[in-house]
Image 1: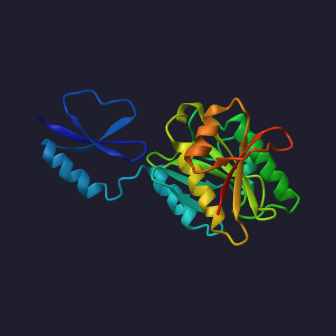
Image 2 (image 1 turned 90 degrees about the vertical axis):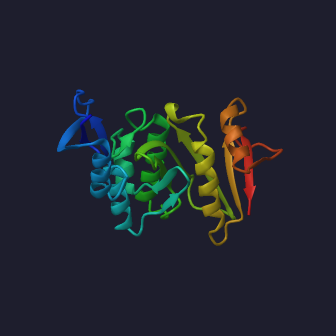
Image 3 (image 1 turned 135 degrees about the vertical axis):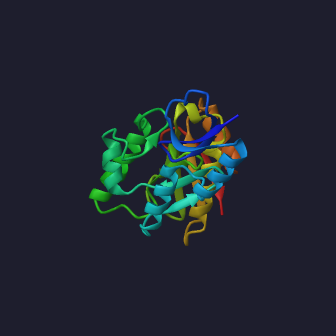
Length: 229
């Protein structure tokens, strides 16, 4: 059976039986042969197997040294710049692919807080909002970030995940990484996160990330979880 090398809009290659109709979103490269010959050709063409958005985002981030970029096994935690936050606040994609189609209402609110801090001259690089970008396809699956710079040795983190991304451990993975980053900064000895009593999912995330529930609640009656240095 003759096969063809096909390519999609993200510049990912695949081998496809020549007699079959092309799948949606794919087109022929014009290269045909045996299945093994096509696989060998892909090995020559596809020296970087990451989808185009992932490669472009990596190149862009590398060119902007002020941007904080953290990595876990499955995610990038990509710092949001104030100019990007303005677009996200307005519900725009800011040039990114969002799981669920657009930034959530919670993410837009967090972006607005970042914009206000920047306009007031209070924003400090690294201590704002991060997008949780899935490494395999560069889709934004949520957001996580600080409620501002550390105060009295303590930094507070909040987070939000797109509905389709929940229950897969992304929040736990990101929270553990961002909290560890904060605790490596000079003068930070505690990271806290809060949630409502009925939000069992958030409570599990904090516990799995190593946080412990404190006996007292905050001024708004929220449960307070703490991760010490």
